[in-house]
Image 1: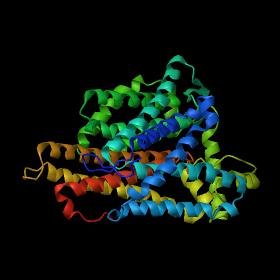
Image 2 (image 1 turned 90 degrees about the horizontal axis):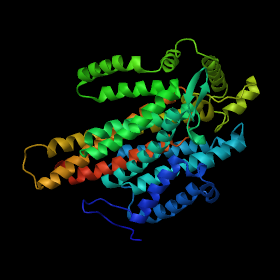
Image 3 (image 1 turned 30 degrees about the vertical axis):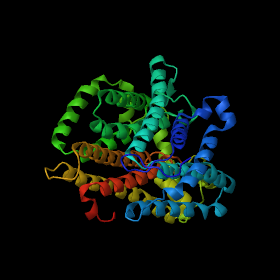
Image 4 (image 1 turned 120 degrees about the vertical axis):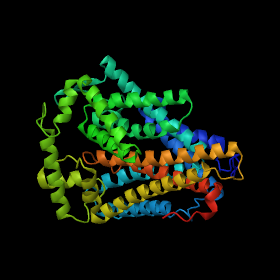
Length: 449
């Protein structure tokens, strides 16, 4: 295995065998192979692939170090990750539920953080980033298409809270809110990448996960998902250059689409501020939030990793978790953990915005009529690369916006989403530095802040 390779465009690339293993790991992780086939569960396919990748990345890292000297924003992401780890570790000995805290930290935090490590080491070129996104979107498409088929044949639809709700086919996506979460997380990547795809067949492939994701979102009956989708539309609109035109288009589409939507899902959305068809989900959530605030006021330094339910049961005789990301962080990790988590989010968004800014400057120069020491082919290639990286930065920020919106109604501090976004942010930042280095204004580029 050759430790150091660069492709014709000058980007560092890992050996093909490692890349293929990584892509298989991504597909296995998001499709949940272990829950689908007994043989995969028996051999612990994700752990096995992860172990191979850990050894490979440790071997490759010396030849492909994370050169973040000029990328201060990426260094801040790594610092925030380290601080978040520290904030969790120091809580474990004092956790109200020590056994659960240790299990969650090992089985979720450390396990999911390895994805960030794999991405940062292995995704160093636009080509590698495209292959990663292809694997990710394929896996998400498989998950959403099997649920969409379950909606059409009725196999995955049954009554929940007074309406017929769509469920996922594997345990991790079984709950309608979980299915809606993975579905709405696909949308930013399709939406922002679509304008940068020239080949019609690739556009058609991108439309497939978009269609199944929207179908899953609608039929899940998830008010959390609906709110996150609307928040993303607002973010998408804020990034557009022709705001008035897209506002009018959106209003027109809304007028046409609303009469076509099933009444039970329209009423489900309206119940956010009104009466539910069945049950008392809103009242229960309000009660949970009140209990969480009380626990936080009693324990401002936190009750420990994943320990809120244990404390809540002891104080109030009720077990449910916070159903709110921000109160989950506050009650589990305390004020200090909330500050560190906020730092992580801000650092990722700052990095994405730096990438967009630098890519915009590169595109401005590359598209100018000035004579350069570049052939037309080289110029076109660099324009495509800069445009693609800028689109991925916007998509990553959009994904974070979606997850933060979902966090208003769900607790996912110990899920993979933040590690996925962190790895993507760091990789995109490092690729952007290479694009700037190769472009005509690269010698004048200052450090990222």
